Length: 60
Image 1 (cartoon, rainbow, N blue to C red):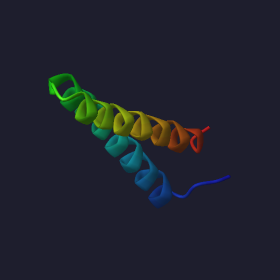
Image 2 (tube, rainbow, N blue to C red):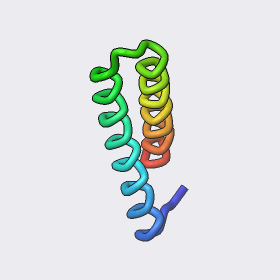
Image 3 (cartoon, helix red, strand yellow):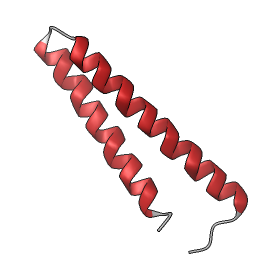
């Protein structure tokens, strides 16, 4: 699959956004005392990580 410059730029932006979200969500999870909220943040971080990995696969 060949990506044009605009698609490549958008893909990189999406990858960066998911990486940032993953880091923030993990940070929020570390700050939580409530186990349910902590788990919610961890699951959301995992989802962001999985999406980032899927987006990265389009670059290979």
